[in-house]
Image (cartoon, rainbow, N blue to C red):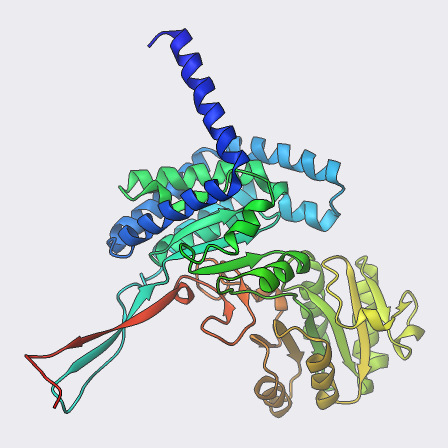
Length: 438
């Protein structure tokens, strides 16, 4: 082919691509059909090939880290122009350490046991039937996320491990970074002889693509939104496809009167300040009235010294450096260096506050009194409950799942960190020997 012919072909391909992007319903329908076909093949793909694909993808990410960082620089510039907050910019930023984390996450998922085909239960019936309940993929997963480009790798990896095809729709802020990471995932699929359409990335920032995904009941089996309240609320309101999601991470830490001072200081500081922009970051501190002038005061001063704005109730406002809390501060997800703080009379009052203002995501008690801890852990119904541990551990990777596709706070099917196992359903396999029903 001559250079002139190559240029003409390139122009034609670009023209076709632009035409597709102009017709979003047609674009998304094609993506859905290809994903469904890929899911049919993945459903019986050997575990070894899925593992090989993930390890090859990890190799590709590390080898291409310079390109990924260059792509991320474009996204960071876009984010600055858009006026993203420091917390959102932190979510968006990739450096070599974070890319190493993406690589480690891919390898961790690769090393997990394959959930597909696991026999959950089996039994014999007097009729002569032998029945097995066997784990099976869901089919096609749609993942809609905002500015964290690492979700591209986490979601792609977990869906592949669980035998599902996935359609990824990243945020406009992470458009270039997600594209660079997605290219590495496709390299992994190709290296293992698996269909490239098993992991697809929506190639447009147009929000019409999200609207299409929410009604693709013929090709998408479940939607997982991962982002802020606006995105998740939109998905939960408008989706015709089933949804795994949490609306907000209104995370509470309760300091009981039997809390250990050193543990309380260490856990609260980590829960609030390690990374403020994640859904497991503490947003409200509840302090038993008996320790306001001792442990409570010490913890609040440490938060203020660390640069945290403390929105305090009337009792705690006597501590220098706090600011008055309003009613809006209870149940508010700051995702920043801010926290609400309130005095409570006992563990029951703490639980009442959490039930009123919480989001069933993650809540923690710090106490050395086991009966009080048991009461808190048994009577609250959050997806994740913690005792003497930072809420920043509310993460699938920290739970041993390799990674997570999100945190689910509903009560149907998946709850808490959604890993590969949670992205499966089951089917019954019934065997007989010419068995008939009388």
